[in-house]
Image (cartoon, rainbow, N blue to C red):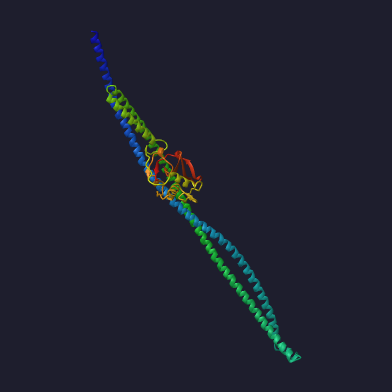
Length: 423
């Protein structure tokens, strides 16, 4: 009887264990599809957000390109306006000088006309006196002469008076004519200057209208860019959230698989061995996903491609650092006089014979993808609408903004959307 009771207890325990394992297996079978469904849903949302983010980033790149082109136009119009204003200032100075010359010419003309008039009046008096006395004066002069020499001298004197008066009057008239001609010339030149001044004023008004219109367009681009960047940030947050969900769901699946294998392992050595392998695989996948969904970037984990050039990343950093402190200029193309972020990166690599695209969006797809945790000096750190050069120890150098220019910074100050290796 005791043996039978013991046997019955053993059978009961085994049946109870089998029932427990059956319930556990059913529970795991139910939990795995639920976890798998959540994982697939998160992955789908991530993919959709990534596609939207790519489209928005392309739109941002187009807006920035349009801004750069518009900025170049505005700079050209500003230069034209400055030239017109400079010419106007010079013209106004010339007009002031011309007005003084006209005033002086008019004064000289008035004096010349006065002197000519006085000379003319004096000559008329002499002529009138000589002609009124007529032959009697001449006859008196001849008769009164005590000698032929004196007679000739008196006749010659009368003739000289006539000749002097005629010559003097002619000289005065010539001076008057010259001054009148000069005054007319100055007046004509002043009229031309006044017409030119009107033309400059029209050019100024036209350029100011164009610049105002371009500034309005630029403000519109700024608004579009701000909206697009806000949308990009929203998609980036969605991707980050979904990456965290994916990591969590993968961890759950890995734990469930490990628990199942552990329980199955109590019935056989081979099952325990298989369970250990699955658990290890699950942990690796979780770690990779966690790395990809960190706040430091949206790149896949574990990417660390080999270098394809003989250029040292430290050499790239050393060269890039030579321009530290130089100004930032939107659309700028000078490492010394002013550059934007993408031209700065392009020019630095161009120095080493490495060609990269001109825009920040284009630079996000050049070279080879790198995980942020594997970033090395000389890699390109890509953000939404911005790029920088990694210098190591979590630091970057980049053409930041008009206030700070080319400067150092923390690599994770913004969400990293890509890391590219072109060396």
